[in-house]
Image (cartoon, rainbow, N blue to C red; front, side, top):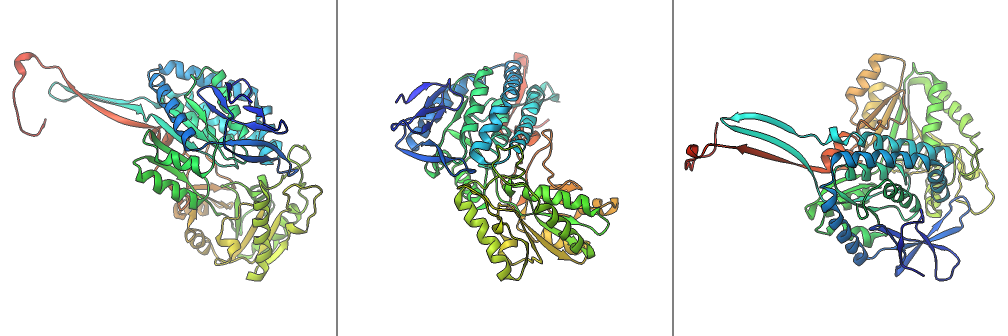
Length: 513
């Protein structure tokens, strides 16, 4: 088997030694590297069948990739902004042209339905759109005559090599949030995607290469903790972007910061949706079902708790139950499916455990997803709805990351706000109301990074930035949009003076005006 070949195959797959399953390799310096001491299985969650073997990088391979990226970045930072802009436009066009292939790849390895995969691509392309304006986003500042004969200007310069560590639940959108901005700003990237659904990242790398991006600027390195830890400590890696669970986000943040790196590490979530007494209950129920069970609940912005205020709970719960039990659940490649499987058997076992334990904690299981049966060996579970949930129950406190929606009943708006603000997670939240005063007060009172008013999943458009508060974000900078250009560049201030020779003199005092 050839271990190093030009990146012609969009997936980077090569036949394994046993010639049974393809080996999914790394994309480094324009070549596909399939040689590896260790491999990880890649499975289709809808069938449970292994579809490929992923080459896992060791620390030495990570270091080799960083060398390639470091050398390539020297020339890339000198590349004119007009040329970078052309590559961004072309990459955007190619990614859109290959949308069907990207969506099918997402569904085959993640499990989400094709329409959801297509929507993920659209939201990722929003950031590519934003980055086509890199000429504007990278502008500096200038002030003349700040002192007699002295001018000052400030420029943005790239960091060098950056690491982007992305999650399984959005194998296209999140990489496009990170790598596009980093590349536009003049950096080289080591992208470490999830080992559960790695192939989409290789399609992204190939699209950028076909758009004219020089080899070595966008590299894809597959791996587990060994590869990640090497990226966190490598002296040539200047910054780390991460999306994942809160415990790992804390590790990424602490380790990277201890080694002098910039870090943005987005963690877990427990997103609440408040339904006020004046809300349209049918609209609220539609939104709750869509936001809770879409992508089988495997979204960091999924609604996992409905907060029913006043006497709306009974009517709202019944509306949600009747809708959720009619969901069509099956293989994401089937156009009739509205919800696909969970990503792994371990995820299925974890979600099942939370539903099983809810009644013992005193909650009411209105709809039990375990009771729905499915053919085959896929990782399927039905939608679950749990009422009379209170803080302190595991089903409330923990991030379940599955199709489980809890309902908490409170008496007042103030109690709803207090409940949400007491949570250690603060990624997203929403309020459903027809009263403008309530909506304005909620926006002001709530201690959460992203807020929706009659919008259940308030993921900002690409011209804004994405990020939560509290244990949902470690670091100071949110992801994509304007804040991302701040994260992936550092500012240099230059003071200049061009005196006549006769004006030169010695002065040991501190410079003043």
